Image 1 (tube, rainbow, N blue to C red):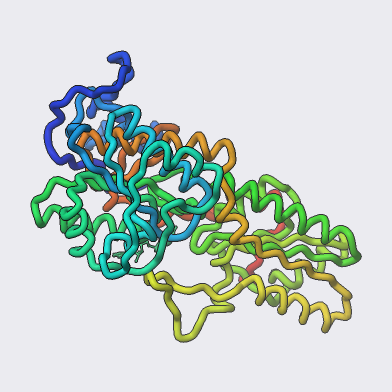
Image 2 (tube, rainbow, N blue to C red; image 1 turned 135 degrees about the horizontal axis):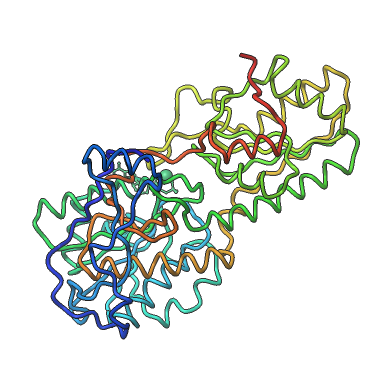
Length: 435
Ligand code: ATP
Ligand code: MG
């Protein structure tokens, strides 16, 4: 966490309408309720001694007064980017909170991500109600559908204006935040009063200034299942190797957490770390030693790891402009087979790529609870006229973070931190680099 974080949350205007929720006064949260970003005594001492400001974050929660008149408000909801367990729980909870806690009964769902705002695609707009969403959390995926690909920002804001939408909830990852930021800039340029509130969705848990994103817990649980299967396969034959490719384009949190949770992984490869294949410290040599010693091995590789070996030349991009990754799982399988063929060691590799199974399942119990809170806090923020923010879970609290801060960096595994050190202790893999 760096010092240069700007934490002020923009609002559409003063809140003058009493919050209709039947809460005791102490349950409402005032805007000046803040938590400290860096829970570090040395940092605090240094800032205070130098009379510098201590960076703090606005705590999320229902405000005693709100900006929007619920009876006149029309709300939009959209989901963008890839799938992640729990999206439907968030949609459901947004609708339920808007309807039952605030009395907002005009809620529109935009289909297939940003395409849903663009008339030429012809996607229907869905009227959302408690009845419509009551069962959607039992399904994986997104009830509203999603898409990748840039859409004209002016046309998106035209649609919001045409439909009289004053509050838009966007569920998505870093790309969605970039789009949200541009939509907000266009809204500001036009001087219209439309709030933009984001709920961070990324299975990789790679969003800056967020401790934990929804779906991550479910993803790790599913990843553990795949690793346990790979382990069972590996121990069932002499020189068995279980190779599991997991999600994690730029950040290896799923692979690392699943490694810690299963304790069966001998090599965990993540995008943040560089590794060699060849040489005495390289993966192949260390794998050979492991196989000779224990007769089986389990390797977990995040999809973004080892890209130096499989990078597409020239680089290719998806519709949203994200770099397409080379297939490190398939590459490793082939390289390992080739290496042991030359060595005359009859290895048996079981390669498991469970990526779509992990993404598309319904959320587990912990994620469900978490999704419910995220959505409720998003509604409280939106109703109070807050805009250009995401709801984040940080330092054990739900807080408001400006979107433009969240897109400045990506959260990654710190290779010199205690979390990764635990992974290294669990695998015993060492550096996997020759120099
Ligand atoms: P995830 O990576 O978790 O799947 P994401 O939100 O990052 O989620 P993307 O497909 O990258 O997924 O982006 C979501 C939407 O936001 C897409 O429609 C994409 O075109 C749009 N978008 C991404 N970056 C920008 C940008 N810089 N400007 C405008 N729109 C953008
Ligand atoms: Mg993304």
